Image (cartoon, rainbow, N blue to C red; front, top):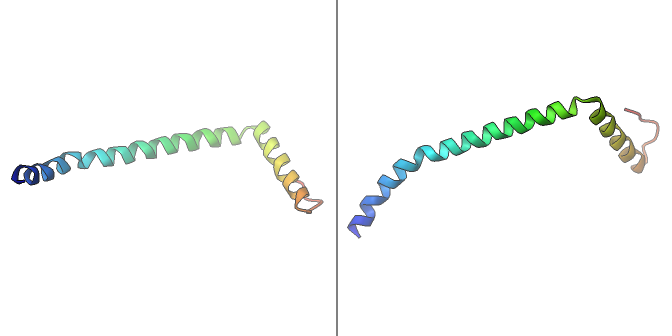
Length: 68
């Protein structure tokens, strides 16, 4: 019992920075994905497709005469 209690705090201290590094990697990945999405949505083809989808949804909802 004595050895197990002594080893636990030491293990926790060595893994403390690993969690912070994992969060940093996730944040960098999320920013990269956001950058790719922004680049795609700025293209004229994607803007046209999104406008068509929104207009179709508005027609289904019964809202006529709105054109984006």
